[in-house]
Picture 1 (cartoon, helix red, strand yellow):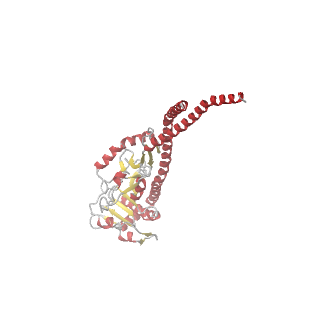
Picture 2 (cartoon, rainbow, N blue to C red; picture 1 turned 60 degrees about the vertical axis):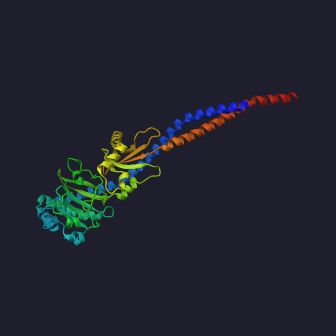
Picture 3 (cartoon, one colour; picture 1 turned 180 degrees about the vertical axis):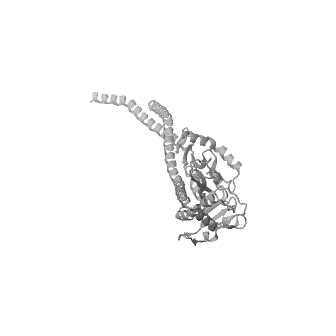
Length: 389
């Protein structure tokens, strides 16, 4: 009996030692597997997220190329005639588009124009700008319908409170720009203008704004981003093509809750908060709320770590058991999707597996010890039986 207890104690000690020794190895292996899974997941997400912005950039580049060809082909008389006919004086010091350009009308070349509105915040427009706006009008009225199945708007704007937009599905039928916007309505200081300047965007890339409100609705009633691509001819910027996106449905998919308890949010390259689940359902977001969330999650440090990492998609270094931080850079809006996945189960799973290893090892040792301890007795019994026969 004493031998059995001694064997059991010895097997238990070996099992415990084996379990403890295997815990760290199992934990690290589980952490490695979890990181590999997160990297694969964020790579798939990056592909999906980037696809929409890549399509916008492609559409804008196509429109810009068409604009340059149209701009080069316009002579002064044609440009003046198109401008005066399409954007008559509104009687309040501004010019607006003709009503039938939205309602639908045939034009001289046989094309049908519809869904177009325009606001020009002054009556006096130089011939060079008239030429640019005439070219932009032709492009917006033709390229907008061509891509309407994917994006419901396309517009051209410059930094002089001028906007020509194709958006036939807007609830107000573009009435704000065509009719009701006050004569002193200005938007040249808005972000969608500043992000495409020569200084801010020297390589003329597509750039997107932060989440914002539509110009023509009350604050808080719509969340949008605008993606814009500069249009330059012979080193001069003549304006930019833009597309506004209502991103609530898009960000619902990005920021929605996940089964693994992960938190997904969007930052810019400097760590500025673009969107976060804690803000998403709020109708008004103030700067203090944004700053609180930024500090809680250390967004500036995360952005710096991502910059140091240098990859477009990847993981940040983390100890086993710590949250896994994965990221994917979105090339269109220059945003970064960041996902923090907690790993509370890594310890539990590693502990469970280590206990299993310890139990198996203890059982094997106990069986081996029992075999060893009973072998001499068996052998002695066999010898005695032979002698008595």
